[in-house]
Length: 430
Image (cartoon, rainbow, N blue to C red; front, side, top):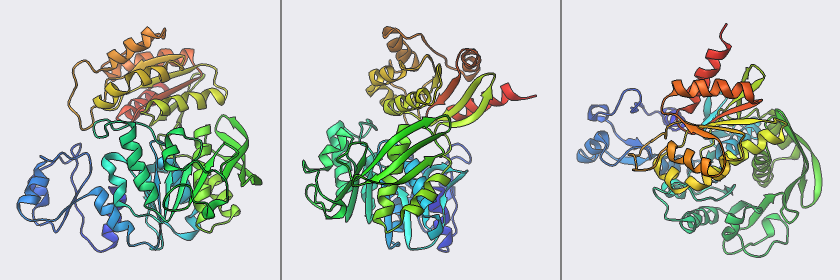
């Protein structure tokens, strides 16, 4: 919403706003407005929405307004995926920085939610929740991966895959991860050919990326270390050059490959791509290192899906951390309920696990769904796990973990980052 606010102000609008965590919601906030834009977190019974509709004030969802904004640009890149959207979009922002692209992020990079640039290139995250990304009609669509999520809206994996398929094929040029088996419905069985001349299935041409040799863009000789990842970027099997990312993890190589594919398809050079990717320093709260407590490196991470948690643990292990502790705040009751066993399977790869209370976001509690239920599932798998309802209890456990582990990650999409920051500050204060 922040970047959309700045874009509207740049168009000459006077923009006001409200938020449940600050000013609260009241119908007086929209009296006299010419238009009301609301996010997906806002329920239909919201007082401001009710007032606007009752008084004939035009109402648009954030997704609808984003689609209108994007339509004003000549070249739009929309980045979708169950994981990695913010990172890949921010990577593209770094690559396109010399060309003054406008960038719209769902998270923050260097404290900013994007960049207000020129009117030619618009790079945006494309959020799949409630099929919001279907309001976008990008020139290039990017699909990083497809997984079952947002189970308060999508019925099953087939339902969410269908949404990604419609989004992907809405663009004149598609970029899809060729390694992701759940993205296979977005492709046909054909895997030969060259880039934009290749028709994989009905609709627009498709470019693939991944580690498999059949992809158009691949990475070879991947080396992971603490704080960086190095690889050779290849196109159609030919080596273009070396890339050194200042972030950890195989998942970030995937993000970089997708960004490279979209950049090449936009007419940029390898030099542009190498410079941009090597300047990228990591999105806030994506395995973000806060510092060191004793002999343990402490991280804040946005991971809130089983696959993301698994990637976080894998990245830390591959970077050489021998013992990894995870403090996880489950995000929403419906996700926790639907994916509880998947969360348990992912978390058991950590050496030590502690769970915070479920962050409800927009949801009411569901009977029997809690962090304690997830802890029991972990214990059933032979993992020593615990769950606490307050951050105070969590801090004591975190201090115990830092004495045992050489890496500790606070994971979740809710307010666990506040716990991470508070813990780190308390244990590094002089």
